[in-house]
Image 1 (spheres, helix red, strand yellow):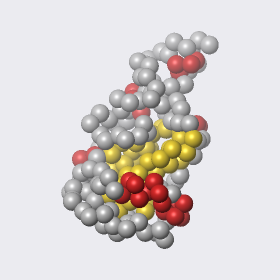
Image 2 (cartoon, rainbow, N blue to C red):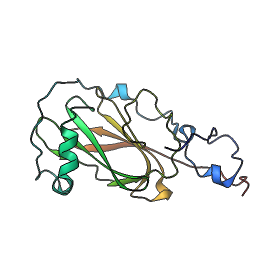
Image 3 (cartoon, rainbow, N blue to C red):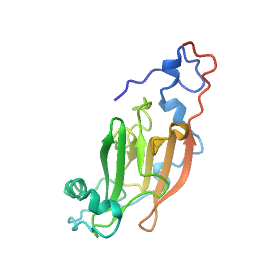
Image 4 (cartoon, one colour):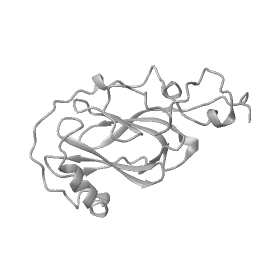
Length: 184
């Protein structure tokens, strides 16, 4: 994990190197959804068999998904957010319904890059088993931080709500840094 550099969108970065890092302040958005607006009831569930036909990712990543299912729910009552690496500072993710074994992925992007992410303090109190993900067991809100599909021009926070067995993108906060005054 990268250290928090101690500056934000409104502070003056002191060097071009520091300016590239995304901090919690860069992701702050007063219009962003809150976990409490998407409540769900946590449940004790017996683990369903992974449904390999529910999503193309299920068959390809069945081993990691089966391991994650065994850990129990960590999101939206009876779901599991599964996160696994796809390279240095790159992660893939899926949500598994622990009652049915169905695998759910976001349509907007498959991977997230976090090489410039220095925002460990973004949304304290949320579960975070991976550097770029925030979620809670009692909420259907999932927040993904970083660069979708490794496109650094789209760096930011992406807010998904689990609705009807689908992750729906409901809000995004794009990082816009003012690095004109940064010293090389």
